[in-house]
Length: 263
Image (cartoon, rainbow, N blue to C red; front, side, top):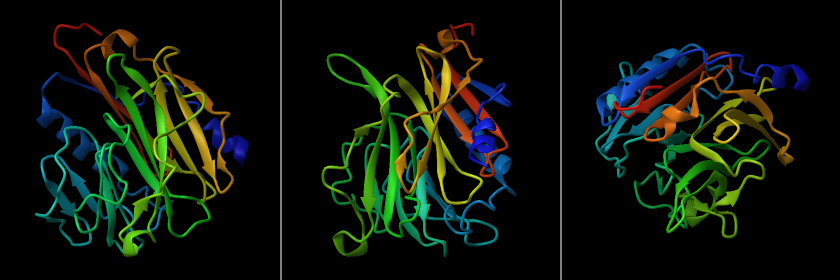
């Protein structure tokens, strides 16, 4: 099973590629809405309520516990890229994040949940085999005076701060070995065993997608590598978003281009 599951992460081609011009923020949110529809019907790998609250954009949020979904007015987040929101199996909000700050379900900064190394890529999930520990992965693409990159993770314990959760001291912004050149975006999907999780990021220099398996034993530091067919030249002044359907059968990428760049 592990070998077969790894094989499906050797992406043969970008199955869906969309492009928007620089500054076209409505285009980005149209893409995210498209991905939401793109992923519908493929959620059997997750508890039903884990993604029922969606916090995004400029203090915007949607509650998918209702039919049709209803707006939520209380988001503390202002973000131009794809954030992450995590709820429990009953659809009750636990936390959300833009990759820099983690907000608890009271829409306040989570204990120790600030200054994460995020710049456009963030994904979170419960640690396999645990009931209150969550991984949150971020991608760094900034720094002074030298810009640094890479895939990082932090660990959240939802039992801290009276049940509001907190980043465990000493477990914030830990680099993932072998992903020092990851840039732009990260995303995840459940393994076929319905326990473990794959995390996918893009390595810039080698122009490859790198997929790490996370299990109850931790992060497997021998990633599955897959070619990226988007040339590096189009990323110079643009950003990237990647998404996977929750059954792992569909992959989608979007590149925000500077209109003066021909990619």
